[in-house]
Image (cartoon, rainbow, N blue to C red; front, side, top):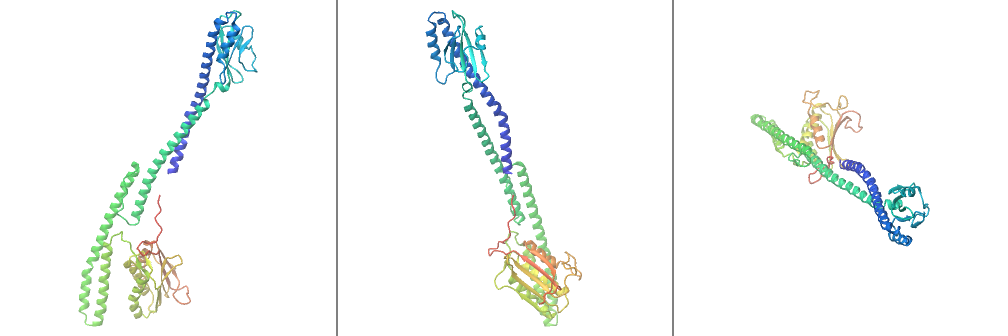
Length: 452
């Protein structure tokens, strides 16, 4: 935008100045010629007036020579006196004849200006009162003398034109900087809102149109903040309402006569209460909080949690994680929920005794990769079903939870058929979540949002 404004201003200013300066240059040339002609005419008239009485006496030659010599000099127009007998007193161009048709016309008593074919100009004034006839005073202006000072005037006009163009470009640059600055600030505010910072507000600065956009963007941000706050409060309220049936389940578990079964159900109820508390904390967590979790540690913890059930179903399991910390920009509870969904899918949708494996590794590009594979029948068409679609009577949301967990962290979600066995036959399901790494300070190493 800034460059376009500069180019438009330069082109417009150049066109306007051309339309103004071209006539001005022609006018200065004409004015210079008129000024030089006027000065030459005044010179010729003065000489004619001074020589009038002298030519009426006998000593006309000496007086005429002195008078004509006094008005000639270096750089001055050539002034000459052509007597009635065609004798020439004073300077004249070496290639010009003494008596010409203009001279003959001037001897009739007319004073006039004559333009020659070579570009010079002649000013002829008759001298009245000469005893031998009419003499003529001739002032010859060369083309250089005629247009003297024109080049300096043109240079001044050119300087003024260049100055006006530069001034126009400076004003256009300031205007462009103001427009671009306001637009970029508006884009940065939009980027912050897109990143989840709902406290970001645009400055009402710049042209009226951008101020209008900034005001509407602020209204949109405030409305989104209100809607999200209401949604999160509703989620927290709904999760809190689950405490009552959970408490009832705990009381029922305590009334069981089988101590082992009572302890197992009580442990499950405790895990359910913990999940409800996690939902409430998540619903009330500020959006600007920078999430991060150790993928390796969460994977080991969730694999250990599901290990007893896998053992009850006679499933061989393998969990491979790196020993070092592997931070990703995902909240720990969301990561645990995604892992639970993937492992739960294996336990629910494959026959008992089907082995599965969980692997966590760092890719060559520095990303964190979580892969869950099994040796079951795999996906019917090689890909995971869509959200809400399930062939086993479930909600069909398990894989979608894992997908959203990866994509909300700017990661990837991939599914395919490929077993977990040693031979890696094309059987069994494979689900891979890829996450960008998070710096130890909590900032995810994802590319920044583009700016205007």
